Amino acid sequence: MKTILITGGAGFIGSHVVRLFVNKYPGYKIVNLDNLTYAGNLANLIDIENAPNYEFVKADITDGELMKMIFDKFRFDAVIHLAAESHVDRSISSPMEFIFANIVGTVNLLNAARQVWSDFNGQKFYHISTDEVYGSLGATGFFFENTAYDPRSPYSASKASSDHLVRAYHHTYGLPVVISNCSNNYGPYQFPEKLVPLAINNIRNNKPIPVYGKGENIRDWLFVEDHAAAIDLIYHEAKIGETYNIGGHNEWKNIDLIKLLCEIMDRKLNRLPGTSENLITYVKDRAGHDLRYAIDSGKIQKELGWKPSLQFAEGLEKTVDWYLANEKWMKNITSGDYQKYYDNQYVKR
Ligand code: NAD
Ligand code: TYD
Image (cartoon, rainbow, N blue to C red; front, side):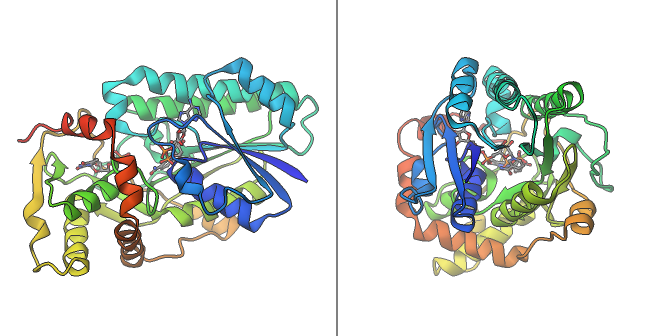
């Protein structure tokens, strides 16, 4: 039986990857390692928590000695590394947490893998990264796998740094690595500090929807299960040393996306058309706000046959339905310190 370590499996994307692997591959033992930060939530995995091929380990990847002990104990055949601090706004207010979790944490895992995989025989260290490492695009163009790195926020700089270190361990020590860089994900179980669940939650509760700057920044949105499917494919098919970009070819200006969400929510909540749009509130722009991200995912489409399965309209409907049906999940994670953090976030323009 193969034993696969998935880090950050209690978070948004990680929980979808864990669920997919546990259900699809009964012959793999999946170990989910997560230290349950504010963004980690075991309720995301309640449906598979008793599966015989699943085990949860609460541990912090910034603890290098502990990582070595855990690798020694489990003798993982592979690592899929998602654990990270993931929110750009938090990286602006608290950059050091991103340096520790995203850079030091990744190096600790690389060191532990290197120590245990002394013969490098069939193992794989798969590092999950973001398109934000490539910086910001103007009105045209796309990010390709060979686009030069140009990170501009503490979050993207910490992810870029971890990508470089993963490649350095491959080139220097021969560690068998694979990397993918994905665009913005949306879907069930996303912590409501990110745009889509935050807007859905605020609309439902008749609270202002904060739009940074003029709302003209563009993101390329991908349904989280399509990302998980790409990770499955890359994990199984990619050659060692390869990098793949993953994206939805689905660019939206923030303000247009928010208006679309308002329309869907008015319909779902039986509100008069236009009701939710009144909640749109322009607030001070994010410092250093990247204008546009857009991925060219031609390589993964051509080489591995991956493409997104859902149209955006369908994915958003599914997402809204999930949040409306899971009010308790939302209430639980937005209790405690969340509200305090959130209320201090925005300066109305
Ligand atoms: P998330 O914030 O929802 O989850 C991160 C998880 O990592 C949480 O469960 C948290 O508890 C855990 N974690 C954080 N620090 C840890 C530590 N020191 N030790 C152990 N566990 C720790 O993030 P997400 O949106 O699911 O993103 C997962 C990965 O995918 C990240 O590496 C992120 O950079 C990358 N990514 C995210 C997106 C996106 O749109 N969300 C897009 C591309 C890439
Ligand atoms: P976010 O979900 O934080 O993802 P990222 O910054 O990693 O792309 O933000 C998506 C876009 O939405 C980004 O351009 C910032 C903007 N935004 C708002 O306008 N209002 C908000 O309340 C949030 C959280 C984001």
